Length: 213
Image (tube, rainbow, N blue to C red; front, side):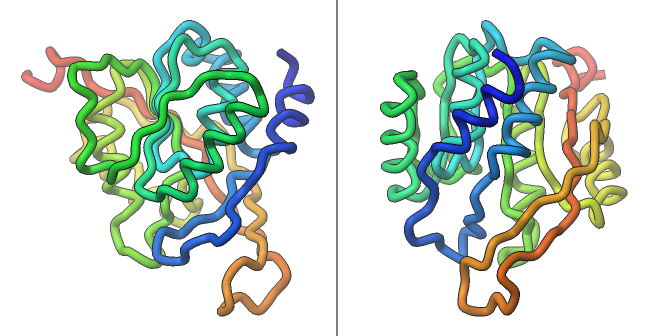
């Protein structure tokens, strides 16, 4: 599937009806989501025929992009029931399958399921401090191949240091810097939209041998 086709399909997905500020619910735009998954597949082969988990999947955009790019199996994880209901509708509209789980990421139990790749647009940690790092920590424990994640560019050095020192990563690379358009969703937002810069990261977890040495 070509990039433009993928972006077009993702652009038709339903998004949050009543976004929850405490969960930092912001839609992952089709422009960013398509490039994130297209890069994961075409540059690294981390999607097609792989088991992919979408952490904090919201309305399912990243996970559904993985299904469209030929993932063997996709698991979407989110704590919010309303978001998962929208993700279900989106999967039906695209006529693809995606397993959905309602739970907090740090309570995740995949019962021996091997996950090759984790993709996520985690909370940035502006409402709940450290939420972004909690997602990253769990993702690096779950993924056997790679983790793709979006984080604010201003946190770049902190993210890299924590991933390599504390969170079981053997490598942490910024693939590109992207402009994230935050629409006015909440009462405290003054502007119609705000652009923030985010890094698209690719993390590779340590193997069991590396972790034990």
